[in-house]
Every structure is written in structure tokens, then in C-alpha cells.
Image 1: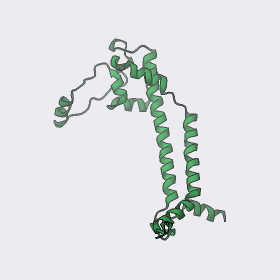
Image 2: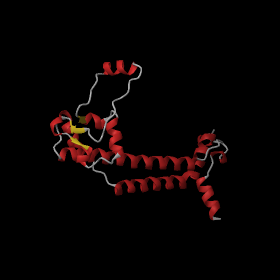
Image 3: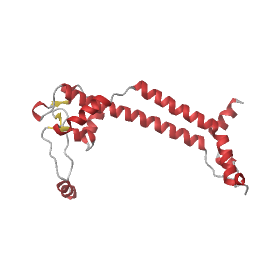
Image 4: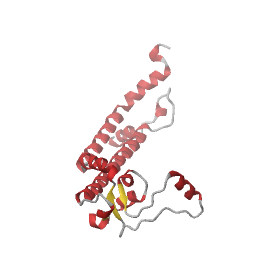
Length: 191
């Protein structure tokens, strides 16, 4: 009995409605979407937390110029794989954080170099590389420190809310599909 209810709840198929008649399990699809949104929210929380952490540490230690730049070990972030990945790629973090000795190419120079055979991006030695907050990005860094505070509790509550919304939609799905089936048949408009 309970197995049948669960089966009907999760595996409702659109082909059970004669006017829709598409072989598609809508609630399974919606569950996958809910899981994907929850995973994305966790990743975004982790990203924002890491971004705030590295900016906060650099700011706290006064690394605002090449002369005051700090290594990841001095920041206490030498084990963070995510921060190393973010600092290795062009993106928001690398636009705010400079590295002592980094080579910056113009767009034209980069395009020309990338066409040459054997061109590789510069490999960063994180044991010795020193980082600092770029002077022109100090306001952005301050904004991140003040506004990027994240909490895993808030993210967990957000994920619970996503799954609660999924359960509500899934419970209402037979009624929604019945209405759509009638709408598709044209009988709702008297056709």
C-alpha cells in the first residue's frame, strides 16, 4: 500500500493523461532540478565564503600593495584548493587580487600569444607567490568583506525550503496535470 503511494507520487507519468500523452516522469525530473538547485546553492555559499575569507585576510594583514603582499601560508589559506583554483584562473578574484611578478597581457597580446604553438598559461607556485588587494579594487574588496557573509545554517534552511517547495509541487502535480490535460483538450474553452 505504502509502496504504491510512493510509486504514484514519484513516478507520475505524463502519458497517463490522454491529451498530453508524453512519456515523461515529471516528479523525477523536478526532484533532479531541486537537487541541482540545492547543490548550486551550496557551491555558491562555499564560493562566497572563500572569496570573503581571502579578501578579509589580505585586508586584515594590510596586503594592499606589492610591498606588503602575503603568501597563502601567511594568510592561513595554503590548504584551500578552491582558493588556489580561483587564483589560477581569470575571474572576479584575480581582478581584485594581484600577484607579485604577474605578467598582465593586453587582449591583443594575449590573442597573439595564444595562437603560437606551445603557449601555456603561467603556472603559479603557491608556496612562494605573494598576493595583495589591487588599489583600484579596494572598494569592491570592502563590499565583499561587509556583504558576503554566509552561513551554512542559512544555506541548509534554503535547501530545506527548496525540497519543501518540491514536495508541495509534487503533491499537487496530479491536479496540475489534470487541469493541463483539460486545457490541452480544448474542452475548457468549450471546443
